[in-house]
Length: 495
Image 1 (tube, one colour):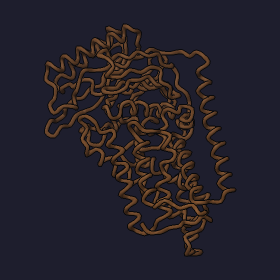
Image 2 (cartoon, helix red, strand yellow; image 1 turned 90 degrees about the vertical axis):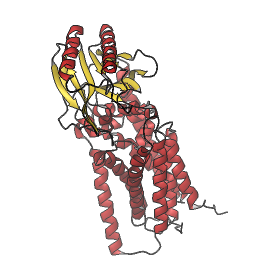
Image 3 (cartoon, helix red, strand yellow; image 1 turned 90 degrees about the horizontal axis):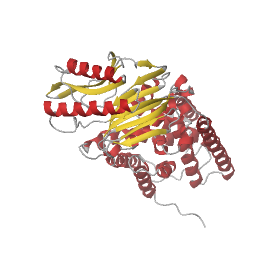
Image 4 (cartoon, one colour; image 1 turned 60 degrees about the vertical axis):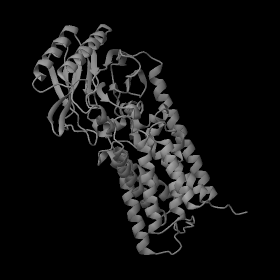
């Protein structure tokens, strides 16, 4: 008996549901391996401009609802539109391009082309646009640490590539592709996953069975709520916040920390008071014999609000080493972006780099810290992205081969080593102490990605261009009317 194909719109609804369920807050990562299937089936089974418009609308809906899952507290719901529409548009373009290729080239090439197109789409969100790696399939696998070790070679996009390949082959099976060919694909993908996970597990095991020199660091929290309320803090409130920071920094130093990292926007400092504030903090660093990454904001104007979001690196002798300005303000954040090259400080043989929060949603930003052993990452989150945002930082650690001290306001603070393991963590909400002291490896590691950068998405881009050129030549040479080139029926119909 012939299998009855579900209505195309059911596949479209499945695509929406799987994106919403698998991505972002409370995401079920296992379902992300299957999320593209609904979209692929719908495009295979339909044709015409109405079908494509409906597909685009469904893609927008899926990503807007997915982003709504992280919109909590004071975050405006319009953020869901601001992120969901462009993310949905980029991925929709990749799917539609694939469908055009699938009808014109060999099926096996098209399958590889699909995974490559999706990687190029993911890369464009952080390489060409201000959305970071949000929406990348690999970010749904943050608990699969052995699998994530692939990022040390390919960046996070290698993990995504495998996931898209699996979905593409499964959709071909549903379409009734040649069994022998699909069997070879299944064996090949199974072997690839086995090798990747086994190699990743070996990489983790190689560093867990031996001792390594460590340095004690601390993530220090704040009582400041600057940026979350309509008015700026008054002098009394700023004084209270500063006293809290001094108390916690002192406590961290007494616990043996050689480096103390404050949260992003740990305090607001006026431009008039900034020199005196830095003098006080420099004296504190010298008295405690500790390096301090003092992160704070300085209002430049109030109508409309514009501020400097930065940190000052204060050495243990009390001197200022450098100033770092946040390079990638979140879209809508009224901060003046920095442009200077990444700084690095050496403390007792440990090279220390730095960035601020959203900067580390951009892999190329982390590449600026390649060669350092440890990165100070003052951060500020909200309930909707806690603890996902901190867990996403482990990808940058694996890619670039350095540890990270992520000190997080309204989120999870953590010490993450160069293989993505959490060496220690504490939530901003657990207690009022807000002092995390953790022993971190003194030395980073060398990675292929750290040396070559985004070689993998660029290779995918070259492959896509080649496939498009190949498809163009096929169209010119011979126009076929059955919508079939690769040997699998399209079965296309209207919406």
